[in-house]
Length: 197
Ligand SMILES: Nc1nc2c(c(=O)[nH]1)N[C@H]1C(S)=C(S)[C@@H](COP(=O)(O)O)O[C@H]1N2
Ligand SMILES: [Mo]
Image (tube, rainbow, N blue to C red; front, side):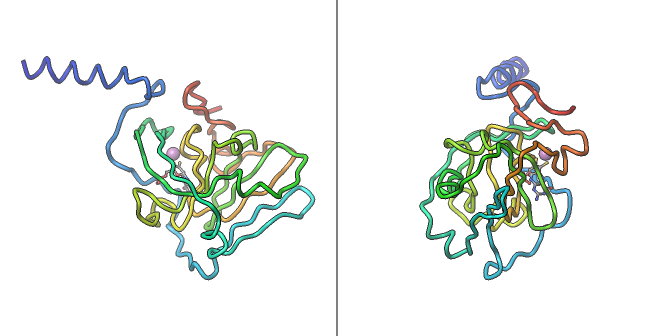
């Protein structure tokens, strides 16, 4: 009886409509970092958007905290196949940050403290699809999960959500970032399994 119940439970979980193909559910929050966790002093922290003409905008931590923020409840999907449902974040929408940005180009490269990069089309960053998140579960974002602030683009595989983000540069081409140069897909939609290329 017990064996039958476990099998039934597992089948139900696999057919959860929130689970993209090839993914499994986890309650944990695994840490995946390609290098050491950088030690970031909030007094020195900056977030910069630089356009293709070299203009743009820069915020200090205090300026960033003064921006309107949103609560985000979302599922996250790692290309290593774990999916975590219903995660809770607070952050600033990229729409807010792009309000005064003038650009003619369609692509962005996210840059992190520590050197990580990842490319994301602007289309995937705007219209309520992405945030710079600085709280998780009502607490300041843990450094190993990208604190003080990380990019959050939950509709793409989680490698696009650059931890310790320090800025975005806007560019005319979809140049590959760190993992994309190492074989990960340029775009990374979990629903169509854009894992590798
Ligand atoms: N700066 C930076 N951001 C990063 C990474 C990284 O190595 N460095 N790893 C990416 C990958 S592959 C994943 S799956 C997620 C993992 O985030 P987590 O450690 O909070 O689970 O962060 C992404 N953002
Ligand atoms: Mo990942």
